[in-house]
Length: 398
Image (cartoon, rainbow, N blue to C red):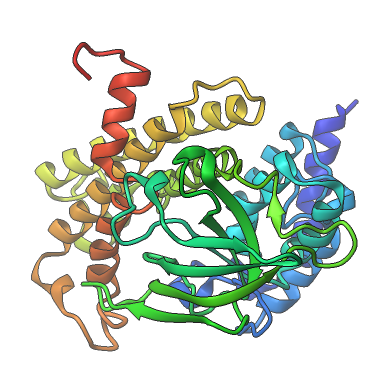
C-alpha cells in the first residue's frame, strides 16, 4: 500500500505530465525564457498557459497558505513537487522578488489585511516587485540610508535615491526602506510598499560590463505614499521606525535566493563537455586535466545542493544560525563564479565571441561576466566573510 507521500508523488507527476506545455519542458536559453509577470507581461508560447494552471493550483508558491494564493503544501510535499518538476524538466512558472523576498516578510510581519491584499496578486504573477534597499554611500552599511519619508497626515512624502535596484524599470511596485527618524540609525527606518507608477518616481538603467541592464538607479522626488490602500491595508509593514527588523529578515531570504546560483546548471559539466569535445575509449571527456577540474566542480555542486537542502529545512523551521544565510550566499556565489570561469576556460577563444547568432549574442561570455555581480548584490563576499568570521567562527579580532 502506498504512503500518503508516495500517492502525492504519483498524482503530482501525472498532473505535471498532463498540464506542463512542451515548450516549458525545454532548457532555458536566455533571460527571456523566465516569466516575471506584472501589469504588462510578455509571454513566449506556453508561458502564460503554464503560469495560469500553476497559479490556479497554488503551485507558484506551493508552501504558502491557500488563503493567500498558495498551495498549502507541507515541506515534504513541496520537496516532492520540486523533485518531480526537475525530473520532468518542467521550468519554474514564475520568477518573482515578491515570491522570493517580500512574500516571506509579509507572511512573518504583515497584518492579515496586508497578506490578503498583497500576496494573492504575487502568487498569480499580476504584480512585479522590486527592492529599494541600497543607496549611494549606503551599501554594506545599509542602515546609514538617507531616503526620507515625512509624515504628512494621511500620507508620507518620500525623497531620495536608491541604486542597484534590480529591474526597477520593469517593476510595478517597490518594497522600500526609508528613514522616518533622523536621530536614530537602526530604529529610524521604516519598511514601505508603494506603486512605481506614482508621480515623482523615475528610473535609469545601469549598463553592466556584460552589456545587460538588470540594475537601475531609482529616484524619488516628493513621492506621495498613502498610509492605507483600503481599509486596514497599511503601506507600512510592521511599524513605523521598526523597518530594520523586516529588512534583516528579508535579507536572509534574499541571500538564500542568490546562493541558489551555486546549484544551477547541468548536474555534470564533464558529461556536457564530453559530448562537445569528444570522449576517450572509456567514454570519458578526452582531456584528463579538464576532466579532473570538472569532476571536482561536479562534486562541489552536489555537496552544495545537499547543504542547501539541509539549510532550507532548518531555515523554514527557524532553527538555523542567524548568520547562516550569509555563509550560504558566499558559498553559492563563489561556486557559481568558479563554474562559469571553468566553462569559459573549456570553451577557449570561441566563447569570447560577443555578438553573433552562433553564440546567441555571446551568451556564455555575458553569463560569466554577470556572475561577478552575484558577489556584490545582496552583500559583498567580503562582508559575508566578515559576518561568518564574527558570528559563526568567533575568530579573535574579527
